[in-house]
Length: 410
Image (tube, rainbow, N blue to C red; front, side):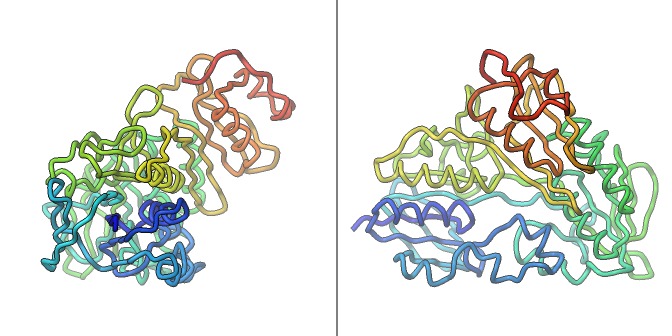
């Protein structure tokens, strides 16, 4: 009987295992996760879960009974220590050996932590990647506490929003000249910055953490790269993630900004596949890696089909979202290579969208509290169509009436 082992019980691993069953795979199927809980959603950890608006059970992607009903052997709290591609076997940390005919790597990404020589080993320093991370930091989010958020990306900003809403005094530092420097335009960054500032968050750009130490009074003392020193009660490190490739790399599987997969999810080794945050793949003439729930699900399901001989090239349709305070930011497309941003006012106060163009081609849309702009932009991008940039800026022209330019977005 064929045995498929899926290593990594997150969004991608869960989706891949479920898709294998729905496509008719009736062999042995193992889903192996290092965490001691069933597969769960990560995005709410830095949003509703930390606000106390979502119970732990509601994080789980499926009821635990689902896996037994589907004949999926869910192995939690277990780490794979080594992968032998030649023998197609796994050695677990407890020494157990597991043989498989096919293996899917859905190992996700690991948070970048503060180095020990900067103070990362001190207590009250947290990351925000796993359920255990969120639970460990939850008691800190209460009125009167002082937080330092290191990193002005989406994770850091979402943590800052939750902390500020809980009455925590928040200082956020970002080494780049502005927040969201890698992922958003000046206009979107400015919008988000102003929103946080209006909620009392102290955002310091071109500023990083130089050293963290324990003050005699018991709190943490943070020396910043500007020379300033501030006292804080806890620190959230939100400086990004790295694809979890150690297992694959040690096994000799090719790595290229993640586990290098082809357009159907195959790795450089026969019968070993990769999907989700850990995997890079070809897209429109270049190689990308997407850290998003939609990609984790869609790529995993496409890879499951490949594993059963039913595959087709995976064409990602990138989209993302972020919830901060009363604002829902929705992003369609990838803005890499843009040379122009067109601002479109929304149809109600507090809404706006930013449209990224390269020449006449629409690449991406950032929509703040503007779901119509998001859906219109997403539809156009996926269809390879581009609206006339000047028309986008005219709020009197309905979105459905935007004139199109010839050509396709690259």
